[in-house]
Length: 259
Image 1 (spheres, rainbow, N blue to C red):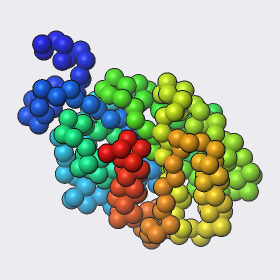
Image 2 (image 1 turned 30 degrees about the vertical axis):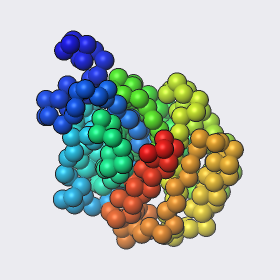
Image 3 (image 1 turned 135 degrees about the horizontal axis):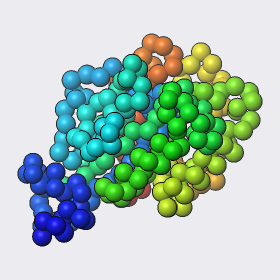
Image 4 (image 1 turned 45 degrees about the vertical axis):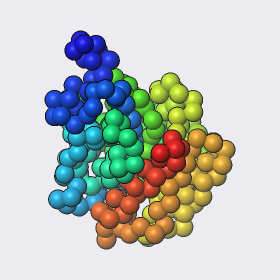
């Protein structure tokens, strides 16, 4: 029996050892990849509530090993690491799903990355973006089922030339993500840029483009952020905003999968 569990349910072993799952139920692990730039990587202040682990919420460390999730989840920019939306997302999911469902949040976002860098598999801050995403998606597949991708990006593409191509670039990148996930209908959840930029007109043009694209893709969903606040730099969401965004991403997933 142990060999069978080890072969088919990698996460079950850890869950069983810490006594938090009924092994009479078939375990499910919902895997989500977090991708984009700094507002997905997280720049909020990590507070004590963000470091409390739960036996049903997992992430990975820099070596790709499974760990219980606590903030900060992203590790690619250690000098900039902060609170992202991943833990609040996971908490919302597990509080509204049966106990045999666990969540694995996989960080892949890198600050300052443009959408074209993702498409072209360029290096940003020492991370080869799409290759790293593919590697992390493979880890996710080994532990559960890829249920969706959380994307927040666009601040690096608010120039006039970049705006002209953003919709086509978004379509191309989403196609690449779904191909890597072996799922042409994989849900893609996109967070709006904030409403607090000094260059707000162009940020809102990005948001308009995101909404326009979502009208052409029935498995693409846009998460509103217009009421969320920045951390004082007019670029990054504050901690409260990050937690709220995670809950909004989760509410959409629960709606999609009817929990």
